Length: 104
Image 1 (cartoon, one colour):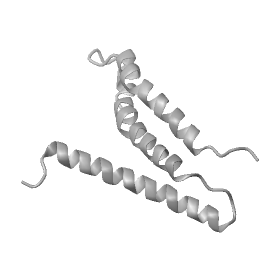
Image 2 (cartoon, helix red, strand yellow):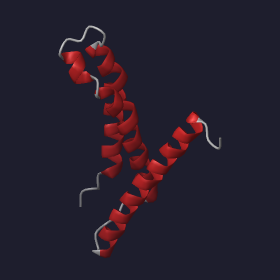
Image 3 (spheres, rainbow, N blue to C red):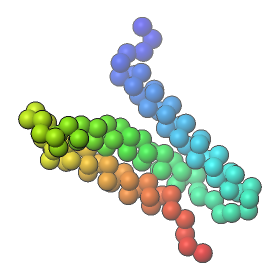
Image 4 (tube, one colour):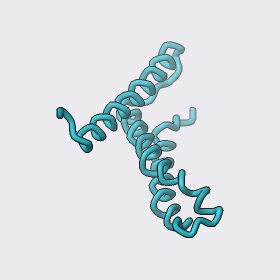
């Protein structure tokens, strides 16, 4: 077996991060072609990392929130919001700050 479970997950995580980064960079290259200001590479890398945190840390655990609100006794809504909501909110703030453009 070439890859185990953890190695495959890390490899897919890195490939997804590179894909998000390349998408953001191609979008910025289109903006540069139009003569508009572009974001720095480190900001794009930070935004792609924050997008991955939004997806995996916050987004995956927030999937269980509707079932917790409907009254499932095995899922506590406050636990879901603490485990998934806080990382989601922090990553959303990091993504927003890294993607916003300075006012002209």
